[in-house]
Image 1: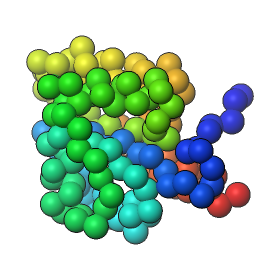
Image 2 (image 1 turned 30 degrees about the vertical axis):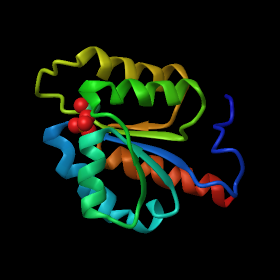
Image 3 (image 1 turned 135 degrees about the horizontal axis):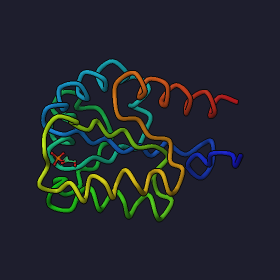
Image 4 (image 1 turned 60 degrees about the vertical axis):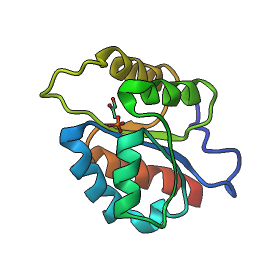
Length: 139
Ligand SMILES: O=C(CO)COP(=O)(O)O
């Protein structure tokens, strides 16, 4: 099994993507608050509305807001995955609502699998992924 490549070196901050559908934005904001001390050391990228809410709740984070998901933000993150510019994806998907941009949601999830990018879709898996990433950096 190939070793997961984290960032460019152990000195560079992790590059983490944050995305949540509307019904899950509160869960993501709570999860970020819980892990804010770890996340303050990371470079964060988020789709527009998610990023705005995360930044309001945790203003000290280094966060780049991309386009809103349905307006191309999911695809911008997909391009970053292809280009090796992300170390993990935290994508809190709403499994109960139909999405007008379902193709973008699928494309983003699919590219994370294609490139074997560590990904989490719920708070409990996000805990494992984040702790796993930082434990690799500590080695
Ligand atoms: O729709 C999204 C992901 O598919 C999220 O986009 P926003 O963060 O702009 O709401």
